[in-house]
Image (cartoon, rainbow, N blue to C red; front, side, top):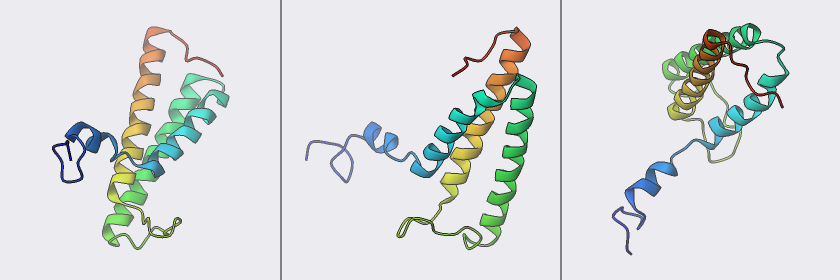
Length: 110
């Protein structure tokens, strides 16, 4: 083994591999959907509702020790990180749209 970690990989590779596939798949679908919303204000409002909803789901998840969310993929139950990565991704997109509104730039259309 040539790496520094317990599994033989370098620490940087370990960090990269901890990305949530669940959050990544959701954010990829979101990125495909956002350009279909006609204007920046509507996109920001949509993202605000999404953030509120995911924060509510996360609070419920924590209060129920994970029982509030179904295990969709056998052997891969939802983790707190899934929620945090999703909320962070939503917030980053919301902030980027705010920047676009302030500067008068336009988000690329697909």
